[in-house]
Image (cartoon, rainbow, N blue to C red; front, side):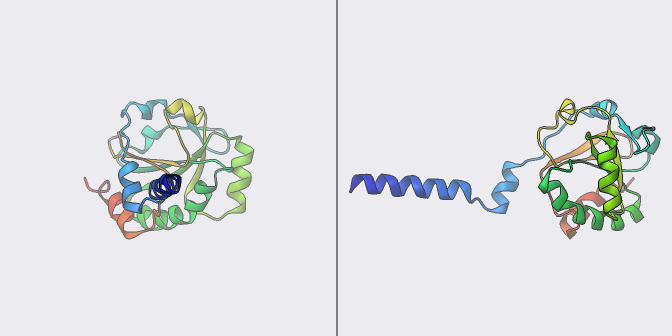
Length: 171
């Protein structure tokens, strides 16, 4: 009888631990603040290999998503990023999706999809930027500071996330 009680207690503990609510998961995934200087280490190129300097976009907030073609959560959130890009680009946001994979692989992926955001190549390994999981999304404010860092897929097209993005469009 005691074995059954212990087994049942252990099973309940596992079930409650593995099935946390979305709210609890959000609490567990608190925003991780990254040093603003990280922007200086983010080296991007366009899909033709030409350097893309983020500082040329000063005065414009940037939505920078780090992803990979093999990352299922990354691919799953692209329609939501596309929805957000269509809305927030009209409000001044620049949307970039950066991968450190081979440029040809990124280009091939981009050509097969008709997303409204821009695909770019990350010229340094993603993990050299203190990014520990994909997808990771950063918001760079108008002054060039990384002000927001979110790990994991999100519904970027939801009203809640759009309102979060709008916080960075104000002067």
